[in-house]
Length: 154
Image (cartoon, rainbow, N blue to C red; front, side, top):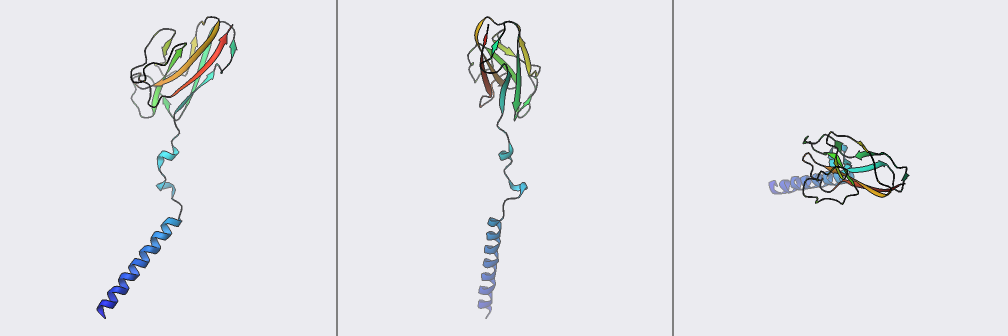
């Protein structure tokens, strides 16, 4: 009789456990169990102006930048999910494993956390500006966070 009782109790425990597992599978995950990575926006940068294909009068060109999924901080500030802007004016992408070079008029560091920069004078013709986010020591973020626009000055 004792053996039969143990089998019944064991069977009941298995049945209860199975029902509990089934109920867990049928319930949608609560907000607390959702992977927080699902809510993270992939970092991006966008050159708001000038716009792709713009035809601009000769003179100063104001570059305006916006980001999403990342915080713009000054150079030297080491903080998760952050960086600062660099503008590459008619210049190729640098080695993405090294600090972004600094060259007046071509590789411009916005090290104070600026989101706007005025290029004083561009020659007449076609131009390209690449916005590239770098970390606290000017190394491009990995994967790279960049945007490019091409425009004409006449």
